[in-house]
Amino acid sequence: MMEKADSVKKLYTQMRLWEFPDQYVIQPTDGSSCSSLSISRKDGSMKLIDEIPEYRTIRVPKIFTIFGVVGMLRLLAGSYLMVITGRKCVGSYLGHPIFKISSMKVFPCDHSLKHTPAEQKRTEMGFWALLNVAEKTSGLFFSYDTNLTLSAQRLNDLGDESRLLPLWRQAEPRFLWNNYMLEVIIDNKLDPYLLPIVQGSIIFLLLYSFHGCFLRYALFLGLFILTVFIVI
Image 1 (cartoon, rainbow, N blue to C red):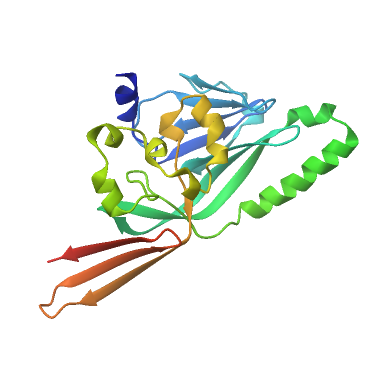
Image 2 (cartoon, rainbow, N blue to C red):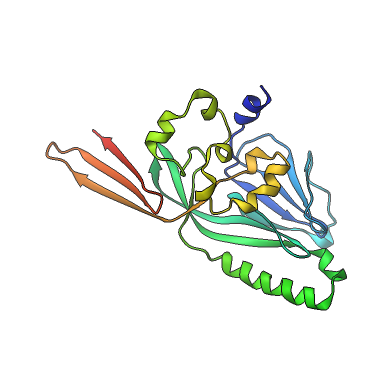
């Protein structure tokens, strides 16, 4: 019964990220009257809070608009939060919008690096450089409402119990680009922040039929998903 209750929680579609000196706070702004997520900048630990922390006017926190949490990556001495800062709707799948990620941003939670050996710091900085490259990864897609890792046939074959599960529970792990980065969020049972992301290419074709109808095809290359939409 607990899984069913949790499964009805929708994914947050737009949030505000507050950058405080000691924590990041992710506040849903899509009309969801829910708690905000606090992430420690010291060790990456997470907790839900009811109110945005107070701050002094001389140190106004930076504020970012984000459209999803990619996940948390734990490296040698620190954790790194990756979020979606730009998205573009590129079509629909089974009647639900599909978005392409246009920009991402990495936020370090690495205060512990101050107390690590110099060689380990250098190694960590090398990883940080790779994360900056990861921010520019292309061909990443997601949906807030439907599972992009399964074909329409397999989605149709899902039982009622499976359809009630959160999207990340329905998803095929081998097709999730952010599978590893979701683990920390899964451990903290933060379903509304668990956004499955896939990598590949998507092609939309609009064709006229002999009867003047539109035939719309959506093809995910690499995932072998073919969907046909017919609009009369």
